[in-house]
View 1 (tube, each protein chain N blue to C red):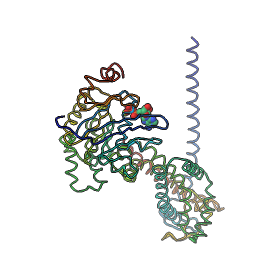
View 2 (view 1 turned 135 degrees about the vertical axis):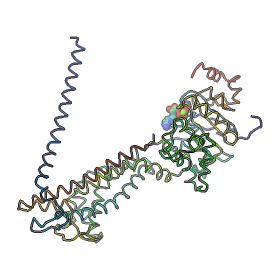
View 3 (view 1 turned 90 degrees about the horizontal axis):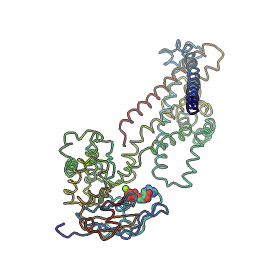
View 4 (view 1 turned 45 degrees about the vertical axis):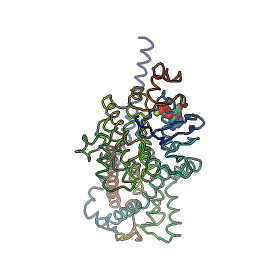
Length: 289
Length: 253
Ligand SMILES: Nc1ncnc2c1ncn2[C@@H]1O[C@H](COP(=O)(O)OP(=O)(O)O)[C@@H](O)[C@H]1O
Ligand SMILES: [Mg+2]
């Protein structure tokens, strides 16, 4: 065999070995996840029924339900979306379409990237100081939503900027050449093209907000709530807090309830992520070349 | 070129630099009304840069500096009180690659009038622009289909219709046929002759036969410098400059 052929054979072997390595790592990760989901399902599924979804928490496991947490989470996510999406998208539009590149813009960019990495408990402390105490919003779902908005704003801004940046500049040029102002170009062409990417980022950010517990505990979202919030100023609890509370009880039945709660939380997340995939798929069909 | 014509648009000692790299060097070029002026020259000689200076499209590129004047109807397009948006309403542009919006055929044409507050008689406007671009008969039954379903040549004519919908006085075209097949190219060249009745056209092309066929005046550029400008026939048959002669006879470039 020539040295050339020998070397080639060796290179193919290394390539195959690397593929195997990647495959096994993937399998490991997936199977750990699979076991986790399996256990949660086995424990929680028997508890998952209409009563569970429509009852408030109780001292008796067989009477306890997730309604307060589920309603609180839906309130929280809706309000958070209403606050964080406009602010985040507009900030991204400003930074991409209007702000002049320079030292200030770079500084802002670095700061936003850093904010995305700040531990969520810090946002909780901030929310407690500003929204709960200073603005006097108490432990309302509005205070929670504003805190969550702070938490996910960096993610929304970064994702939206990437989506806007990916819009070909030739599209802007064509529109400008037709005598459009920057706002008209942004509104009619850039944002529609960037929308699938923006929405995907938004939904991923909201998914994160749904799963967060620490900032909500910090601002004092209660656990024993026997009502559904009827307005943004009502007190509330959320799914992850309810789950956390159940797991910290001694009785085994509450642990199983927690598993049922986790299934509900996962289903909510799954629905949101499926929406993101669907939006991305639809948006990919109508692209400017 | 039976009747004499006025200068509508003019570059006056225009120099344009990207950073410190000079792309257009002291070019003075008149553009006559209702005539077709073509700009030829080897790739990278600054044709597109010069063309984009007429409707201030270089404004969108960072670090571009322009000295000199571009006058439209004797008004300096770069005067401090000149509005680039208003300039672009009068001076339309068609790009190298057919690039319709990912919308319906109708919406492609209707967008510019719409954002400029000319919403009345929109159907007529769209029809007129499509007729002017010699596309109406092919698309009149499918106006609500996506423009992306059209062929390349049809897309480019749609882009011309889109630019015409604002009734501009000047149409700038940057190698509008370079992505098209010969049949589509011929259709667009025919179209140029019709448009010339009402419109002033500046066309950048690297296809010398095209320049010779369609244009009344030709400008030859090299390395950012305008080497020679004159009536197309003179420039192709009896050029003054040796470089021009070499270029138009295909000895380089
Ligand atoms: N956006 C840009 N940034 C920097 N340099 C550019 C840019 N566009 C063009 N140039 C340079 O300017 C010169 C002229 O380019 P261009 O006007 O596109 O030439 P042409 O259209 O004749 O091929 C070239 O050297 C090119 O590299
Ligand atoms: Mg060019």
